[in-house]
Length: 73
Image 1 (tube, rainbow, N blue to C red):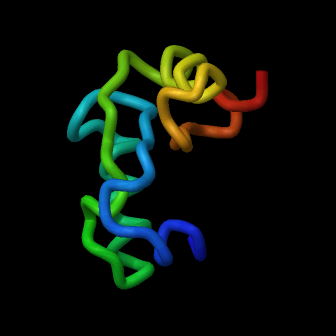
Image 2 (cartoon, one colour):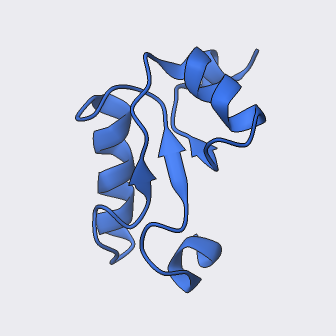
């Protein structure tokens, strides 16, 4: 959170589901809880956590929101 707060909006990218999906809303809620705008982190829509995690490993996004079960493997 310190890194996200210290950078301009849009510096970090996240993924995990489609635009407006549960994990997108979860990230927006986290940003609001931290006193940041809901779009502080740019959302990159994906077809679920598996493609989003692959994109993160490849360097396309900085973080993925997902359940523990989805992220564990």
